[in-house]
Image (cartoon, rainbow, N blue to C red; front, side, top):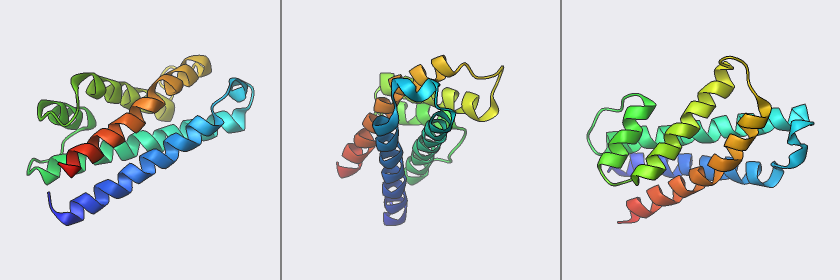
Length: 137
């Protein structure tokens, strides 16, 4: 992987971690009653997932394969043992939740969305750490 791609991957991973830290710091029971905080958490989650998806695409391009859609890029990383299968599945779930938040498919059930974010935010951190570990090898 060339240095330019490595540098861009590092920037995106930093974005993921910053967003995850914000979410972890502000995610509380009060989120369901505080619309402004809830929307901020949703936005931070969306940006974290988008940055993670960008990482997948850049790593794929760095391995001389054309980047495709988010799910194909995740599968590519799993097939190359850059991501464990279970981690790939969690990243796919995060991407699906991101899409629901952005497009509001069938409306958003805030309880379910907040629960999903709580369950997936740690997975985004682990994804970032896993890619960093892979890059160091």
